[in-house]
Length: 288
Image (cartoon, rainbow, N blue to C red; front, side, top):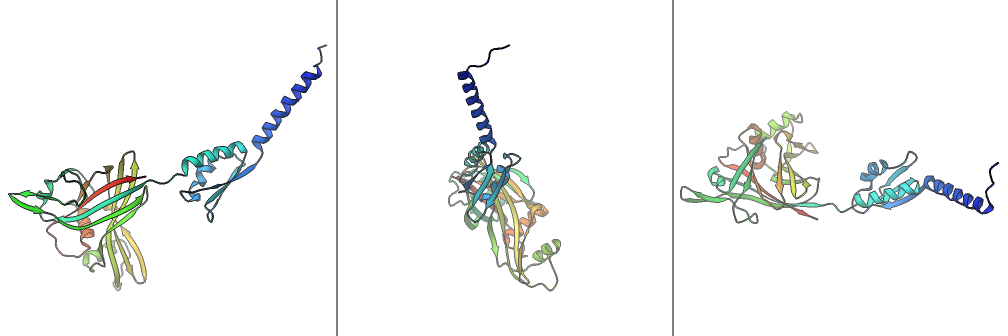
């Protein structure tokens, strides 16, 4: 028959067992925490938090106070707070400086641009003039004659990383056959429609990838007709450009049907024949 445990050993075993049971109960007891989200909508984080909760855990978004209410074990709640600290940070911004211009002579632009590739309705090239992007203008000597592009407009826009911003190239534009044709193709045209207002331009969506900015550029046409407003976004004439931070690229309309659409967006669908070419010079700068 084995020896019985001494009172001292029995007491130590009892204390150890009690502490172990208490730690188990503490780990699995439900608790809750209210977390204030400061830099983004709380609802955006519900899925991320829900992915690390236990089977009995819950997360609720309080939009009024922009908070998350999370219920789970204390151990899981600590992990949730650590995750929120990583995700709830200020968004990075991209400042876009854009120049829209046209010129009558393509050879003149070639002196300042190294064309890289064609994509959809656009040609994309590096701006290689040494004067930089501020106050950008395209100029060069063609057959001994000084020529310069005609700048249409300069615009600046601060866009949150991954969000979209719009640059308008034509507002309250004339109603031309080209506009009516585009509307018919999208099934929103009736013969008796009266156009109150039409604007054209480009949607820019920047995405920061390390020290580069990937720019999605899509032409659009906005309208106000029959007391209703909306937009037609021409994804078939879209392009994506990868631009190093602070570098200027030049984007030209291409010699394609979608390129013709790009020219119409630039000119505001005036319907008049244009002998020149339209260009975008864009400089993205990452701002923290």
